[in-house]
Length: 114
Length: 119
Image (cartoon, rainbow over all chains, first blue to last red; front, side):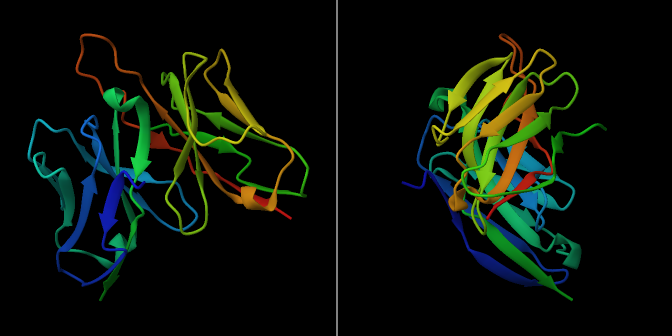
């Protein structure tokens, strides 16, 4: 059972466009939702994270939108650049869910074309 | 800023051999997590340690064991290696939440990984 569902699996965006990746979770005990960026052969790098007490968080070109009632959250990348081409993982964790282990979505491969 | 250090970065082993992966967390971080990532897959949680004690266990095979030492570094020991163990192994570290404070104990920072190839 996939506790965190991520879509789309792949995404192609024109340079300067907006990239949107969506995630939905099952476990209401989750209370921390990070996004990680991963380049091939490298470790996941924390991009931005949100907790359920806010509906939106913005850091530079990256914005997380969070809908607690729908159990959904999304990543928006504004003014997408070719250097943003990578795989993006949403994740969730929470002490109430048992531990702080991260449960990841399946990932979205983003390609930003010039 | 100092990051998580993992060694070795690449490791090639034969079936049925053993392997030891090492992880050095960010200074002052007291919690270590191990994840396994197969090709084209998302990272899967294996095991975690807080203050040198095992704090949680995920889908870690019985052939694997791990520990955290007094200097907070951790080692993942893998025995009777199988072809299916070929993967990227990541260590992540965090600073545990303290009671009564708004902490970020669940914020995990990943290392560069160890690529294990079993032939």
